[in-house]
Image (tube, rainbow, N blue to C red):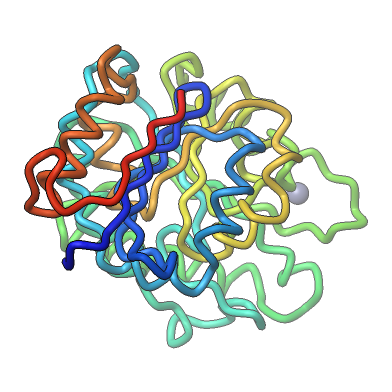
Length: 287
Ligand SMILES: [Mg+2]
Ligand SMILES: [Zn+2]
């Protein structure tokens, strides 16, 4: 890191967005994002999608974890499938051969399982309605997915899927909360300490409609969904970079300490290996 680095800590509500920029304004590091409001669209346009994507890959989640207490304790975790556990495909996952786990997703599920969390998957599979894949194949994919996750020490209690098309007006297709409410009844889940993690605003909406906490991951469709559809959420949601980061946040608890801005400021300096006032053009903290 050269001497012409600028760090920006933006804060809006309880969302913190920390970027380190070089003098040309190119982002070189992104530290943390937590909960969202529309104001963050501005940050996205500053940072630029491709730069963000590359920095997301370099993200070191450990630094951010220090800033959380255990304000929110989650017991049940609902997960979307495509874009959260496995890679999205534009032409849908039609066979086990096309199913690719996202890096770290099985490990994250295993850590959550071992910490005692119940994990349930709720996924829209409209490809069934369109005849692109059969119910039997989807169920076969799910069995293999569960077996592979089990090899890592993870346990998914049940997979709910909506086989209907967009126009069928069913109660289960997200953004409707039907799958979550069915799980609530069938598996006797307390929704007050549950969270839904997905890569689409429709996941966030389904979670909010079901009365659970929600989190958008930036894998899969997440970045684009956040950029274009963040205002359609109908309520607050948290952001995590990927399922690993989401699971770390859950294991640590969600709430920021009251002195988070100064802690974050210090973290920025330490991240860059600097002491305060040294070799930094400016540090802006917006609260
Ligand atoms: Mg998805
Ligand atoms: Zn349905």
